[in-house]
Image 1 (cartoon, rainbow, N blue to C red):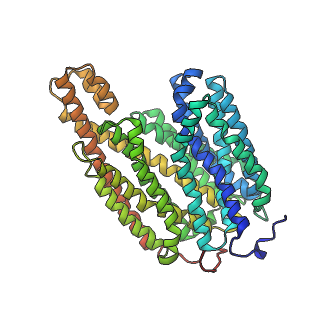
Image 2 (cartoon, rainbow, N blue to C red):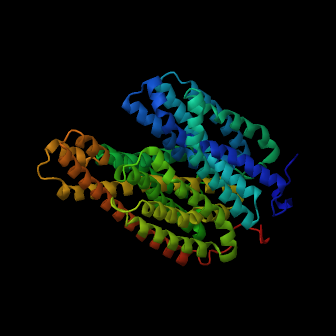
Image 3 (cartoon, rainbow, N blue to C red):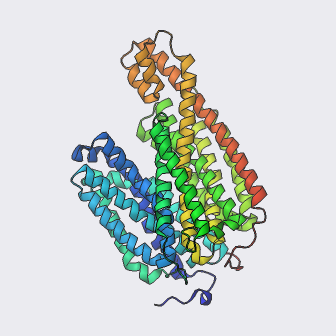
Amino acid sequence: MPIPPSHERSPRAGRREWLGLALLALPLFVLAMDASVLFLAAPHIGADLDPSPTQWLWALDVYGFVIAGFLVTMGAVGDRVGRRRLLLVGSLAFAAASTWAALAASPEGFVAARAALGFAGATLMPSTLALIRTMFRDDRQRSFAIAVWMTTFSVGVAVGPLIGGALLQAFWWGSVFLVAVPVMLLAVALGPVLLPESRDPDPAGVDLPSVALSVVALITIVYALKELVTVDPELLNLGVLAVGLVSGAVFTRRQRGIANPLVDPLLFRSRAFRTALFVLTVGIFTVTAVNFLVPQFLQSVAGLAPLPAGLLTVPIALSAIAGSLAAPGLAGRWGPAAVIVAGAALSLAGYLVLARAAPDRPLWIVVVGGALAVLGLSPATVLTTDLVVASAPEERAGSAAALSETSGELGVALGIAIMGTILTTLYRFGLTDGLPADLDPTARDAARDGLPSAERASEALPPELADALMTAARESFASAFGTVALLCAGITVALGAAVALRLRRPGPAPDRSSAPGL
């Protein structure tokens, strides 16, 4: 059935659009699963392919690096060739790359397949979000659709290990990748029926130097930030970061001077657009600190096994889902700025609770504090994503969606790198004065590398000395954890203030309908 022009369609979505949203959720669900099941299948893959440590690190990381690097490019390509077309091609590519990964017979082949999955994933994420912009023209319906879209990703991350565990119990490790194939083929089969095509009516050519600059900038920045948190700052990593920052600066300058920019500088003239991108990045930055550090606390300080620790993080995942789904209704009644500010206050309370966590205090402090922090900030990620997409003209929806996704990727990378580095530095500083005086230098150096290293070193020590070492290590980690929570609290206050000042009257966005209600 042909899709009528946008000006002839009702501003309110009907059955076809909601079925289309369900279809769009399928690729996103698979993307989220793919990000989480690899860690579960890691022992099986390692035993079968026997990768070197370097090869295994690349297998883990290359997927995220490639997605981050190509999001901006694929958003612009979707604007030009059609978002539905790009989604269908990307779905086929993801199915093919998943089959490649499942059947890989060597570490090199598996790493290459993971890179191909990342490239295909970069085509899917901005395409789905841009199509939501086209399909849902009513403000409140679009906000709810974006909340469902983001919740789908959270659910995929949460249930990915469960589905993966069941598959690994019955089949070989490649089955966790093959599960994506029928889902993607279903999207390809039903996409032309349920999804409209949308593109820039007057597309310009893709500027290849801009593509190269954006890919180099994003991949090198994300790579350097990840490396800086896992190892001591090295000249090579700092050099990679410098390359990324210079490439980003040249890319930005080039966009202002060419007729066919990959990212239209005019988008940033909107105060709502700029503020929403900033709040989205900072919000995900602080939420990442919870997702990254709470599992470490539960396992390293509380001494829980991975399964009990994972179960205790379920309330945090559920709070993210609840906050995302509640955001559109609350914003429809009180306005996005009021909801984000109120959520920031709730998140602030959560971080203050987290700051009280200690080895001798109940674990509910960590669970409740993390859940409150995530519950308060989840509406901000939904509503700012909606503001980013809605603030852009429809012909630039793919670019706007890609910028939203890129902001999220950078928020995650910055959260892990900066908060991880601060925690490591504070841990080492606090450990210096807390270690037993008669501890040998080898064990002392091992303890400084982190709690897992301290635990391994303690196994070779006499019981009393081992207990003293682990007590000092746990207390130092908990103290650093509390300081990071207080830093996140301060950032959350600044985020709320920025929203209150900058989004009180964001002004009307282009192509917005005034139709009321869901």
